Image 1: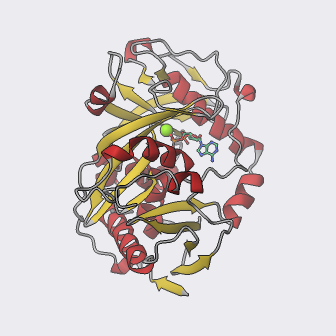
Image 2 (image 1 turned 180 degrees about the vertical axis):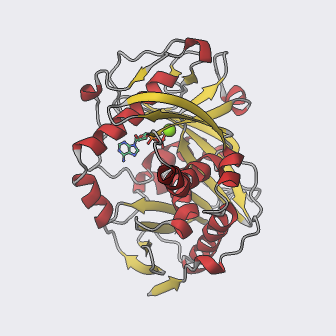
Length: 363
Ligand code: A3P
Ligand code: MG
């Protein structure tokens, strides 16, 4: 069985769909061994202005970086672990299902929102329905894998500088000074679970969050819910107008979508040179990003495409089985194509440790 969805930018409506203010439902940390921790241990705090370094040379101990193993596909495992621990708080009024139509990572939604404007990267999204909820998981495409394996030394350095800048701007304690001595460990993360609704699609998604802006320690969920998150970015310094156009065209849309989905208002960007030295730090207000780029991309078109895709998935993925996976793929100038896979395959999403242990009262 198969299904198709046309993606024509010209036909995507430009009126903003309703999007519920994302609500923080919970959090978890992944430690430096990438083990799941039901705590705030990896939460970072934005370094206040007066404690920031004057100069940000992002090269210090950069070669000691501990990489995350990109060959291991974690699928939705960390979200599923979080759901299992919190299922008692996530049921709908009937008590028989989770009160969400979709479960996924924020990155997948960012990717969907940016799709109408994407000219280079393709994607694969797999979907499985279980007890009324559709689980969506992105898989690396052959093209993305090739790009990853062929990345130049400079591209790898740029990624490491991006991580290092986070260390210059955020610390483990509120009001602290940056500690750039520790080598970067890509395995460690602080993640937040959000609930929102795009038109009539209820969404539950997790996102890695860079830091919070507060001078007092966050000790529990209530305090976290009241705190502002900040996103940290790096980009190459701009030396001619063409570079600013491409920043707006390619990066601002991704930054906007990624931040909008988690209610972030402020992005701090370090503009670095080709030697990894930040020459300027700028703050961007997220709504401004959409306004200044409106000659290049339209935020509403992105959200409407995302909504149309979710609708298409809901209408396609009806059968509830661990052994039924709908594989959707898309690339620039192609339609979205869905094929139904049956049995246990490389694209299976839900493990037995999840489905056997997700206790909902009708089961
Ligand atoms: P920049 O955002 O400054 O490019 P995020 O901004 O989404 O929180 O990501 C943090 C940093 O991780 C990015 O910094 C980038 O340098 C790095 N990064 C992004 N994708 C990566 C990947 N696939 N592997 C390693 N590092 C990556
Ligand atoms: Mg970041």
